[in-house]
Length: 370
Image (cartoon, rainbow, N blue to C red; front, side, top):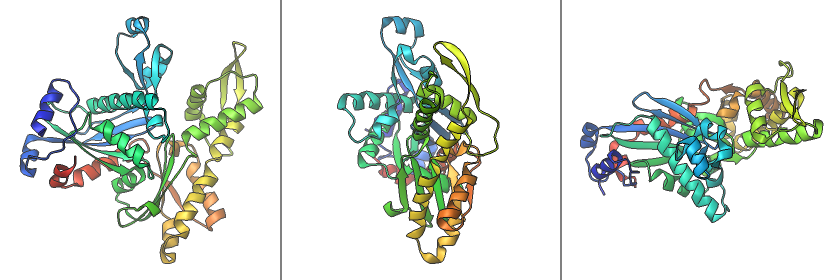
């Protein structure tokens, strides 16, 4: 099927089959128009940066009404982002990327989450405002050491929404977007994973990348364990703690107290959770630096110091106050020094870089992608 047919299906409101630009010449493609997208398809949030200047982000939640009552109440067939999260008790609720990155997911759960992921990708593309006469080419960021299973799932998802697609590692996209491709260590903290990538002027290989699971979800779970231990009377859900974390998270010793209200036997009660939240956030630091140590110690000794002094902190988790300084302190303990800098746009760092990759790929390269 040609791209012209793909565009016709998009005009009719159907998902475009994943065919690539296999028949048009590069020049013809340019005259017909191509919208390039950089997509950070994350477990917690999905963001897009588009060549038409649009930038959008939504939380990676999808929900479908449970029954005729909820459908009548919601007046929608599918809800996305914070709206889905808010109405989740009335929905069959999905956080689709969580399952798609799991090797041994139940087949029925996998297929349901795959559909939710496809709908989420279509929604983020819709938010990018493609014209009906445009081809849509996308670069999607994935975890640094994503399994073949995960990549196949994401490609399968993309086939329903994009005319042509390529994948890249999320930390590589961050570095590419900042033009920092030589002797750089990237830390990309997401919800499900923290991805570490060593850049040295070439495409990173498997040995240049490490994925660990001390990330946003791990912090939420650790925070919950500490709350049960220190405040057993408090009633809460993981989602409530996630909101508290996003508002108050810090690893600084000197910080405004995190005073929050949680119900106790139905009555709102104030708690000071500063220490518990700080401990949960600090728990990420040693494993991250242990990963950095592996990447530094296996690098050319002549360039190890330069590598340690060029550490970029990215991803949603980078917004924890004081985290870059805590990583520096731990690097001094484990590596004898180092410098960590938080990127300026943690929400769009991955999608900005993915868009830059999309722009820099020759048109004939996109033609070959299937």
